[in-house]
Length: 193
Image (cartoon, rainbow, N blue to C red; front, side):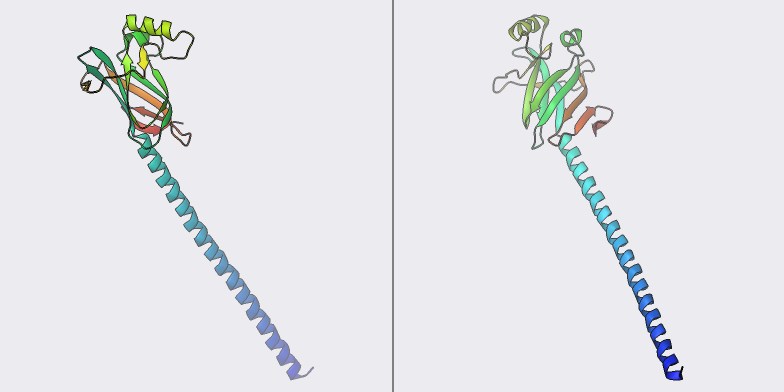
């Protein structure tokens, strides 16, 4: 073997070693680039989920209820107000203060759907409850409550702001995406487990 053959073999071995080194470096660089992009994508996904959750929570916070009274005619009830742009479903309100409703169950009332707007749910006296029970016999209803009661235009409603007997203890409902929410005075609006 002559020195030319040996030199060619050495050059060829060095070239191969450099090619292998370059391939390893390119692989490591590609791996690092992939990991960086994967982290960025995961961060963007988390940010998107956070923003979607915040948007959903903001919309869910658009559902509120409170007790009201009106003097003429003498009526009491609960306002259910949806200020979000979308309806809510299976809205169950648990107010305190309706002894007729409480005597017939948990005192709550159910609204199957609450589109954007403001609605009056009348608290019934024992006599009015008996009349409603007869009228709606065999149909689903919330005892002690007249869900969908009509108010004449211009009816003055007074919110009961400081009456501890008349308060909303809890609300549960579903949004358009099927997420169940719960509102309490202690926790505000939160996604239900």
